[in-house]
Image 1: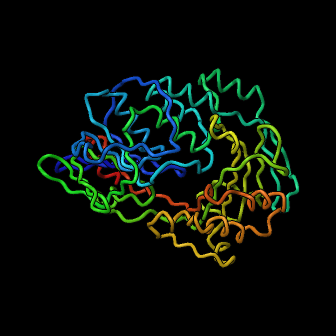
Image 2: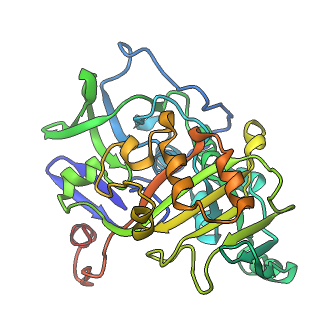
Image 3: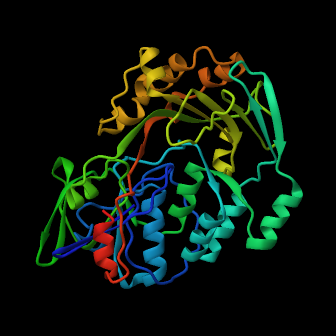
Length: 386
């Protein structure tokens, strides 16, 4: 999703993707950067020395916001001042896995060819999928044949790989000039004036003037809410849990995925029909190889309520959406909802570090109302897409 603001005008570009945050981008050219930095500690600068005026302000420092910053910086180099504002105090390894299909790789290559090479170097190829029922009995196993992979490479010159969500964020972060991301900055609202847009932050932090505002701040984007006022996304009556773990007994060997579902149930259907689970490896970096696996649990809201777990789909805070990791609530909720799943799986879940577990609902935006007239200008069509 994309929200872009400039003085007296707002436009919206929409592209639905179930596993991504709102992404707002509006500028493009090219520049190269080569560096590697760690995100385990926040990137900070002297607040008094921080410029209060920028050309492009990006709200949200997840993969979407970082990709937007990398694209704009690559396009315009140092002719534009680009700043990303992230509400977290620092980045820590969390999240799950991202499958880099051909279109995703094309997008990374468009930002910069070297960026794609770093992603594919860290990614892994999944060789086998093992399908089990919810008792743990193997129903079937399917292999990704070398021939099928070779055909993909011949057709697109790319092969699909799996990489950790945190690693994706790290690589995009490394693409940016030092100091581009400012942590512990939660935008509360914005105003428009003669110079552009004035961003206001919580705890009385200094306001920032920007010529362009990019909202990449998640399901419940404050940028989108104020710009479009189109209400919250639709909750699809499904709740997910994700976590990073190291390999342990009960997990498959090699690059194999294990799925636990009822017959005919698809893990990534728009709304879960029944509970399902997945355990798989993912591409990591040197600093995260001790947690090179992930588990994902998905359940219909009816099963969540049946287990006595409270989940508010309209919650707006990170704690409410993802669970309070300090009190282990996300992990404890997962253990309750899936308590009758195979012991081999639940032992893995039970021993997971609570700080790596995220919990959230599955949300969508209905785009069926969009009708683009060939005679419309790009901006007019963009506004209608909202």
